[in-house]
Image (cartoon, rainbow, N blue to C red; front, top):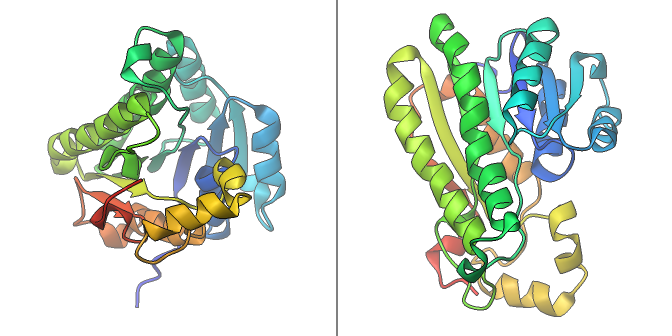
Length: 258
């Protein structure tokens, strides 16, 4: 059987790799033989990720950038050309998830979330696609959220809802445009996972119990339970899957969300 998780010879770019899903993906990709560039705003968090890699971390390049800014995206592209090479696999994982209602839509924080979650995904994708088209090969995986599909009755996360729903729409549009070029574009919509982002929630047993009532599997996910499906979508074997927004949520989106 073909090795699904063999990424030897593949160049992988992962944004938002300083913690959580992005960090776990970076470590897994290095273990699978890929050459990886990890991007985030805080270089110390990226270096933490690199230092957690049990092997081959000389194949990992760290680059600090605010990918919502054109000049920094341009500088990243130059760095990639000089170090990583042409990108085969792009995983757009950078994101912000602070509570924010539509009543605050004229604030800088609203713009920041839209820029980070949606616009930066478009910026980075748009810059790596030309080489993917030339090579007739590419894998793009966008990290959306269950918040693209369902909404909370008690916590206003309107900027997050809108931006992650936008990521799903962008994914479908890109997939249709670039399928003829050998590029697949998919999104995953993670539910609640044990990570740095949910650390405070995990420490509150009452909150955890409340959330678990909304999850048919009745627990938070483990990071490997979202990492491996993403790696599958990034692999050669997933060549006939494109334009999909896949919820990885323990069944949360099959029921009423809190």
